[in-house]
Length: 165
Image 1 (tube, one colour):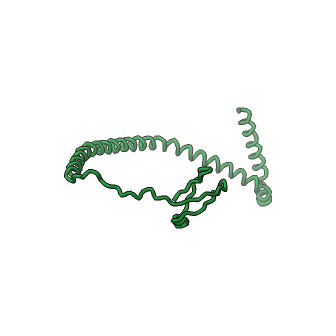
Image 2 (image 1 turned 90 degrees about the vertical axis):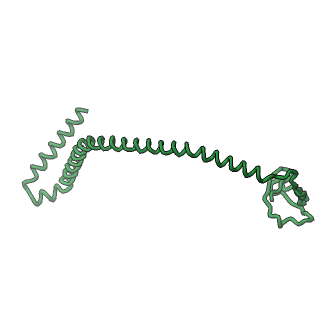
Image 3 (image 1 turned 60 degrees about the vertical axis):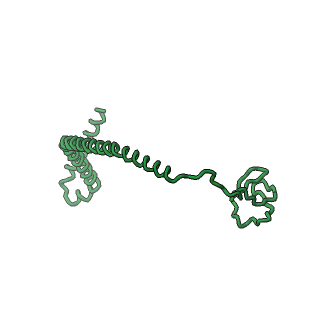
């Protein structure tokens, strides 16, 4: 049950078994106000039905409502099937468009993919050669001039690109 403090109007949830029929003192946890609380039963009166309900009227009303519901369902089903058909048509059109777009896109995207992969591979090769320059020169003494020319050429290309920008 929910009890409200008469001082600060704070509400507390209390188990019914904690308050005996005679009542007891309670203390608010918020404002520390103490008051006597007794369970009051307001709903002791027996509710009486003043009119007799005729079951036939209820049954006829229910039947009328069921008929109206069935009448409403038929147009709804037709509308749902039309909506589903429209969705299927739109999906098929989208699939056709995407397949055409993918065919034209795949040719161009393949070229750029190969170009990017080849550039990354070339840069990785240059980094590898620069890293292993000393051991390669020890094994192959004639490669020193080739590597030096390669790095000078790359440096010139780098400067050329920077000047363009």
